[in-house]
Image (tube, rainbow, N blue to C red; front, top):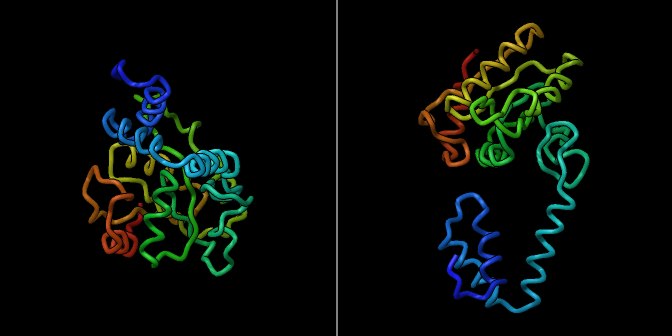
Length: 200
């Protein structure tokens, strides 16, 4: 960062630059925007950050982010708890929920298997998924990992783990582009991918 700026402004911009998708120039714009706001607004912003970090936890069932022990989807008795859709991140749950068509529940892995990045199966929420299948009430597990090398490897690994349990394992049909991500797919594409899922 340029040395002509006030040090607190530089430090603030450096923190913003650590966020995904935020380059140096965007970070500087954000830092200037914060400084130009009234103190009460900045305090509300800071309190919102602290509250989110303090109060958000993992759902004890699906591992999605929530304020309560169970997220609203897992707590909803109207949802079909016999179908679990496995996704990489909470952002993917949001994307699939936008379709308004899926009525099952989710399981969030919080990552994908990627040995080159040091992400092994043990670092994902796979054990929690296996625990959910112990009571044998789940009839189908939908692999909704992204159509990337890591997403496919994770889906295949899980399919092999689940095969002995006798649960039906399916994969989203990909009208999604190879290498694309669920987060940025439109609702119609996601709905068709869900509708046309295939057995693994």
